Image (cartoon, rainbow, N blue to C red; front, top):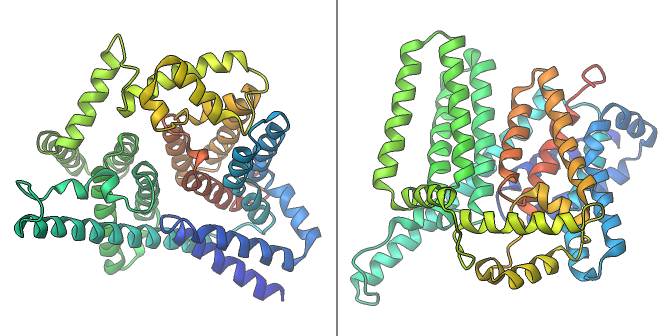
Length: 419
């Protein structure tokens, strides 16, 4: 029974990794199956012993408990219960994975292979979906059913390209895949077959181009860090100075080409720069950079009035919407936007101590990654930190699952000596 349940656990884990970038109703079902299998498995003494080894992986469970405590002073119980349901992975995934023996390198590789395959499947579907819409529009223009000068290529950019999840989240997923593939090239690929190298190289190029096409500003910034990592490896480790310079020139040329030829990418960059330079922001704006700054200003003011306990797990949305209405922030109010900064969002919801605890949840694994020389864990934490500076990623399933799953996987690979 023990062997069979362990095989089921590992199979469901790979399927969960595969399903993350795909249809959002699949991962909850797989998590439920993982939990049921975990209960059937038993072996509670062994699980408790593993909890002691992987205790750092249990930190998100404590964060979830803080959100539960926030329900004690909540008026909007309905929204609070939905929020707890969204964040349930903070509790279940660490409990399941931290109770298991440390994952081997081979098991971790299979999980990442499933995730990469899932991202590739999602990207392929998104591309053909955009292609279908593009040719459908061309057909309608050609038959006179639609008046236009020509079919738009915008269907291959930003949210029009990302069918399943928000483009910022998809870019973050692809970024982790690229970092993992680069780690394979630096650590394992010298002994791999030429076919494996070719396949991974193609995936790396396609994912890299897709990150740019998704037009997520933070996604592109994280991608540039990946490129910097690759350049440093080429130049300082391999001593390929000419190749390193060529890579830099290629990236620079590509960036200039995209800026001059992609209206969407250029406009987003220009608007962001103009917003940062502006002395007075339009409160009715819906532009992402402008509305973020406006929301952050009001969130800080609200936090000062609710510093210790926050406004409550279920009341955060109502409090924000009321503030937007008072301040005339029609863009934020109409779209019912959250804080777009997870540290501020958590602090305002359940208090500054919880916001500081969230920092601790990210800082401790980062320190562990440095001490154990685990570059992919370092990248995961740093890229996630950058993303949650401009997105409240714990307010949607795509962000909660990504963090809870990979944080549990990475920290479950640690042995007693690592801890």
